[in-house]
Image (tube, rainbow, N blue to C red; front, side, top):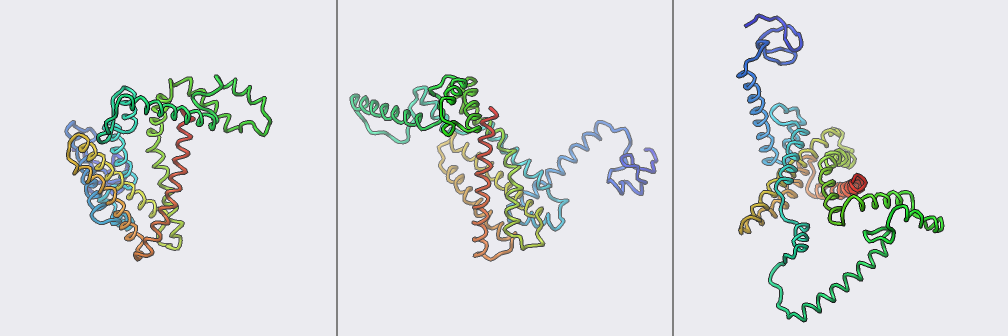
Length: 337
């Protein structure tokens, strides 16, 4: 082994086996294959160890992981941002790989002629079935015509192209013409109508675009949720904005972990006849709500009356932020098709 006096990484004078500045171990400049693999597995199991400790403390003592990180105990736990990104990525990857039947699948089965029903329908004669089908068809057509008359543009529009729509706008009074935003919406509508065949293709592409953007949108929303907590608890000077952000990141991480477990139970319930999985899955949603409430109380150190008041106040404000951001996501996804 070479006798070096300076660190190969930062050129700091060596006083021992590890550099006092960057922490790199004093090793030969050329690594063997076994040394390279050893470094990989050492870093991997070190991360796994911190991940297990973080998950255990996150659920065993609500808000304790956040408080420990705030007090400087960070070496034993995963960084809050890394923790959130890791768990959310695992959840979205799992959800995209294993999906349970939904209304879209049921609608697809109905289009193929497969009957999807809940329970046993009452028996009806052939004549009654024809009459019911006729009445239902007439009601459906009436509702469809009303919907088309109330909307600006529909898939069965009176105008065959955007140029025809613009020509019609020139015949209207200025106050009756569409706004600039409506014109952009209509133009995009006709582009989508040419690109996708029917409403089904559009809805599928639109849903995929929303799901692809959802992880990024959620990550961007978290700082806004932390800002709401900071503004509501503005008098707590010893809690900085970053402390609220760490709390929100840990709460979101716990949500994705429980959601991951819930998704797995739903898959088991759909592939077996055990209703127990569905029951446990439903209880997990309630348990996360209770977990969030207890974490809220421990983090902000309030009595139960004030905890409940501030909990529902901040939850209401955060719900408004979620709805606004999600609405913007829908608009963005529509214009991005």
